[in-house]
Length: 275
Image (cartoon, rainbow, N blue to C red; front, side):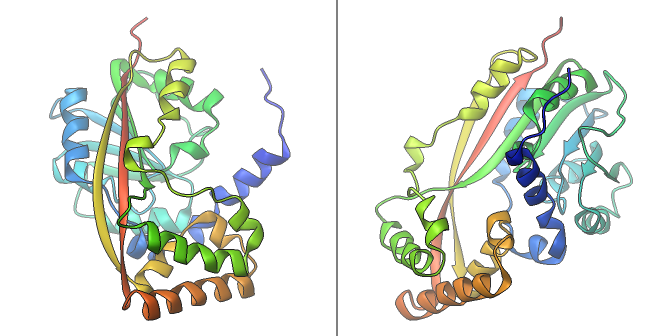
């Protein structure tokens, strides 16, 4: 069945490629994931020591390295050539880790060849009508799908900081500001990917884990993080500079040069249907 191409799909495809523009900044600024998340993936999947892992959208190997350190065989598919190059350098001491440049939807992979498929903060760029079915085909019977994301959250502790920064967006990029409806409390974060996985009919029951954690950012480090977000990269250069300078100045003057950002990592786990 041919899937019609829409304007939204074209825009999404463009944003999907923006991360490759500055791979070194992406590696420097983007946060990793709690170690407990990787332990839960291994425990749930029961992957054997000689098991094979497929990673979809490895970026700079932030989620790859924890598995490579444990000795697993990993094949990473990364769309961005610059990101892939950074990943290859980080994994150079792990001969069982392979990084290939390509589009996951089109990349040729052998069916029934992986015990575990993982994707960290990347699978939302994959067309679900294609992605889930392809993952199911390349997984061995009862193989595990593990999808995870970092989500910014807000409690009473961080509310003032979030609202203060939002005033800069309202002043510099009002259209972007209108699309921001606030950050949810960690207990109120929805889990829409569970619905997606269920709808695909390719996997069994979905297990969801959530991990709360915090990270402190200097003013400079925080705007570097923002500079890796696709919607910020897509802004016209002058506007982006004005926005980021305004946020950095606000943090320096109002919050003594640093802020604490609250995160929630969400992990979705499901086994491939054996039928």
